[in-house]
View 1 (cartoon, rainbow, N blue to C red):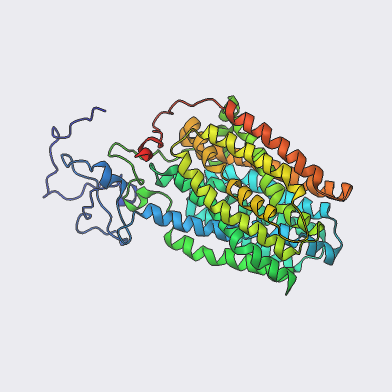
View 2: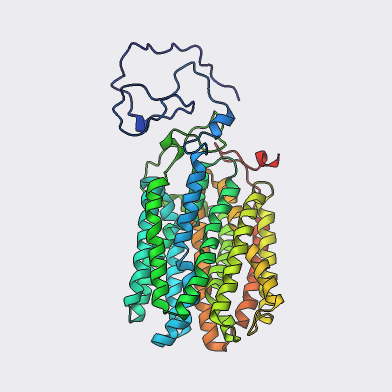
Length: 493
């Protein structure tokens, strides 16, 4: 690319005072050369670099992509760490419904269907909130939105200990936790990856997505033991306290954009220019992006396939695996431990999927993931027993590796097809994920009440996965959106 020469401009006179019309430091385009700010600045914040003067050489790709702020590590990796911990804290509630479904039924006499209705409201709001949360993060900042979301999750989970009626369960589990967890949805992971990284975006998306899996790993056995011992109220308070404990870390380390610290995104070259801040309201932008996305088949194919993903993970296995295993005589803590093991391998599978997404066609990866998941669900009804057998362990490992491995390729396709609006589009695709999850969470509970088992649900889920695999292959190969470079090439060396 031909660059405009800079030697033709006259350097500034060092004897002149600051230009009163110059923008304040907080709005200047940052310098990535590491020079200190000019002396005499009244800004009390830590010293940040000034824009490089005319004639100063631009930093090379290595320095641009690897500016450091803490311990020689690019701050982007600290953001990933905080985002991961925040997602772990928010994932506490995602482990709650399957463990507490039977205790709530035993104490209050509520049916599987009525409890599943509250779970469905939660899942539905989780999905519908996500695209608006992405736009709110653009408008008001990631740190503020994430902190408020964690506080809402903590309040909703903590207030359940006082409930005595089903509408209160819907209010706390459904609306409060649904809105909070929706603001901490996978669109949050997409936003961080797109803002802070040019290289390794797929890998980072996989790591952040795995935060939910790590949350299951941490919370499922603990919540099952609490539900069996002190009771389900202790489990709800544990989730509430964990979400609340993450808030100070978010306030301390999470930053909205690398430009706020005078840095380029990790792996960005010298020609990188930060995107313009949004000029329209969050809700208006979110709806405008949706209208644009709806005009093409790519959105419908991605949304349809991701709806099946939600139906077969959050809606079915996360909500009904423990009750289904308990129907066959397995102890609830044992079944919850198996679900936690799924979370362990999900952590591995999702990170590995992100690595693969940086190197291979995301469409083919999605097709393989959905097809393999469908086969495993078809065999699941034959594997349930009153004890853990090797065949069930094989399913747990196999299914765990595939659990949300679909997320990094889906994020990549949204980014490649929709550019800077990719995170918001993924938020809408995630809404379809949660619509599928909400529908199956409710329908599976009704099927259990009607037929006395979940067998027909597992069969239907396997068939849906075959359809999702076909839809993924039909997605067209994207051109490169304006201003966006695909990030799979540099990872091949």
